[in-house]
Length: 91
Ligand SMILES: [Zn+2]
Image (cartoon, rainbow, N blue to C red; front, side):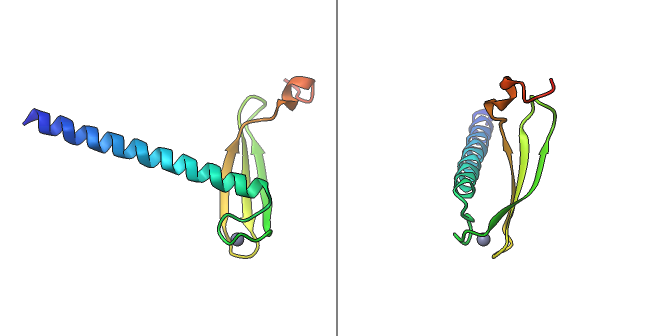
């Protein structure tokens, strides 16, 4: 009986890991599309950066994008570029 429970938990665990990996992959593909200037949903060049936040120098930057055509909204945590090391940053 315990083996069934263990197997069940393993299936749930691996299932959620797969979903998470799929989610990350999808998110990355959407970000790639946005970086090229296209909306990942309607494929039009109407994507716009609406918000840009960062939590200090070392933390990732939160970029929010909005599509003017279809209303697609998403935000991405982006690692800071190497500019931080060239004295651009106060810390
Ligand atoms: Zn769109």
